[in-house]
Amino acid sequence: MTIAAPTAETRWRCTLCGNLTRFDVTRSARVVEYLHFDLAGESKVEETEVLSETLESVRCRWCNAVDQVELVARPGAEESTPESAGEEPGA
Image 1 (cartoon, rainbow, N blue to C red):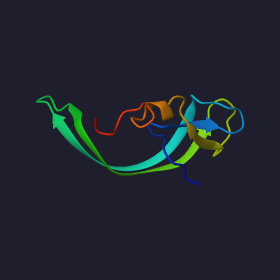
Image 2 (tube, rainbow, N blue to C red):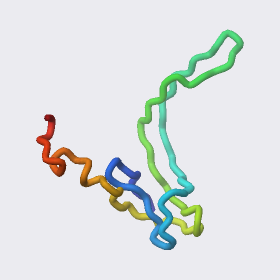
Image 3 (cartoon, rainbow, N blue to C red):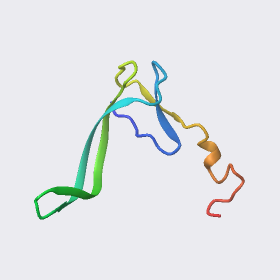
Image 4 (spheres, rainbow, N blue to C red):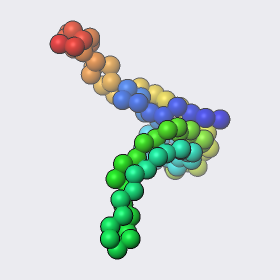
């Protein structure tokens, strides 16, 4: 089972215990990294481009439930949109 990642308008919530803050996430990612090596041979990642990413599972840290996480609206997410604040988009 895969789950969608949280967005600016959503967050994760455990359906069993209600946890909103602590999760263990197993993911697979395909990335391109730009490595900079100093003269001593030590490397540092200076740029990362994520080509693809898959969230494989999410486990609740509080109750240890596996794949019992749902996406729910963030508090105040609907108030932060320009339309609900009485502003026109792009204004």
